[in-house]
Image 1 (cartoon, rainbow, N blue to C red):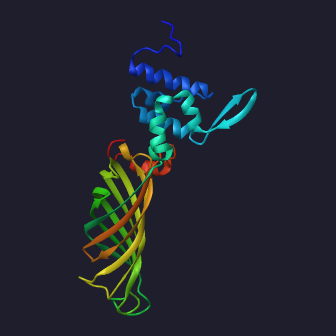
Image 2: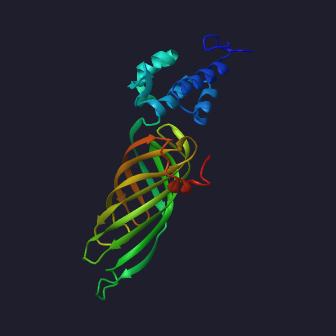
Length: 268
């Protein structure tokens, strides 16, 4: 059966696929697999997201023998009027994976602890050292990050000054399944920062502040990017953290090196 652009079959699946392919061809673009997948999902929002990611900054066209750039909204009105209402309501920024989510939350941990002395501070006092500390444990997050991670906290602890402890730390969190900003999958996060407190010993409270970055995600968290600020308190056996988070999702800008860290986590 011959189908003209003005006589589309009354089947939503075929209609979306057909119109999406025609849209790409009218732009002079290659029909990408992502566009075909989006059309097959029968989801106008997803189709608009794909088009926004590809052409949201403008469309180059040939008009009366001259090349010019028109806005994506202008092109959409001519070629996909069925998507104009959605576009006018939220625009590309509100519908694409680049939308930023902001939220807060807390995390708590119970950890074990091993210590390796690196430097004795040049004195005979066994309580003054620079140590490399390893603290493996389970960290439970609530708030915009909701889930439990296995993690190892590594720290350099300096107790050379009598009555004062300070140092730096780094934690890598591995979530087999976690929900972040309403999306669920596996994820790897990394936190680093500084801490300080009183004389080193059992029951001593240390305060810390740091940053979290997102290394990779799987499932609905694939393409996750963002950062968080943290502050909290810790003892030798555990910690409590407050955080503020900024995160967005961008499937077209995935760091494949870091993405390998997520192999085997959640739903790849």
